[in-house]
Image (cartoon, rainbow, N blue to C red; front, side, top):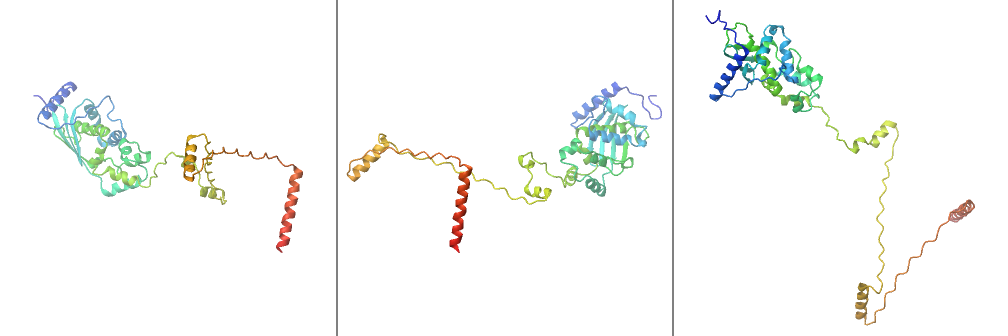
Length: 319
C-alpha cells in the first residue's frame, strides 16, 4: 500500500525539483505560458510591497500552523507556476504530485478605496515612487492597516487545492501565498490588480495639493520688495534701475589729402565745379580741456555769498 488515508509518501526536495522541471517542460511543449516563482537565498521578499504582503499573512493566527511548510516549499522552487488576476490567484505546486491551487481574494469596496485615497492625499509624488515603495511612513502605515488597508484579511480569502489534505490552508496554498509576496517584489502593480483597484487613481487623488518642486535658480534666493515690506513693516520704494549709457560715438577724422579716397573725391568735385582741387587741410587737434583745480575753503565761501546775493536780487525784482 503506497499511502494511508489518502496521504502520499514523502517526496524529497530533490525529487520535487525534478518533478517540477518535468511538469514545466510538459506545459511549455503544450504552448502554455508558465511563470515559476524563483527565490535567491533565504529571503522570500526584499521590497516594501513583498514584505508587507508576507507580514500581513503572518499577522493572523489562523495561518500560523501551515505557513512554515509553505515557506520551505516556495524557497525550494516548488511553485512552478503562479498567475495573478483580478480577484483570484491560480498556481501549480509540486509536492507528492503536481497540484492545482486557486485562491480567491475579495476586491476592495469603493468606500474603503476612497478612504485610502483620501487619507493619502498630498503624500505620493508619482506612480513610479508608489510602485518602488519610496513613499512616506504615513502612506505605508495607512496601506498596511488591518481591515481598512489594501492587504486582505483571512475572511477575504478562499482556498482550493487538488491535494488530499482536508485543511482549508494546506502547505501548497501557503507556498502560493508566499509566492505572491515574491511576485510583488517584481511587479507590485499586481496587488492593485488583485484587489480590483487602480493605482493611477491613488496617485491622482493622493497627489492633489502637492507643490511643484522649486527649481534651483537665482530668483528663488531673492526676496521680493512686497515681502520685505511685510516683514519689516515699511514701504520700500522701487529701486531706480540706472539706464546704461550709450556707447561713445566714434569721431570721424577726415582723411588727409595724401590718401587716395580723399584725393579722388576732391578731384571729382573740382572737375564738376571747373576749379582746381585744393588739398584738404589736416584736422586741427582738439584743444585739451583746462585742468581743474580744487577750490579752497575761502573760495567756496565767496562763491556761496555771491550766489545768495544774486538770488536775493532776483526775488526783489520779481516783486
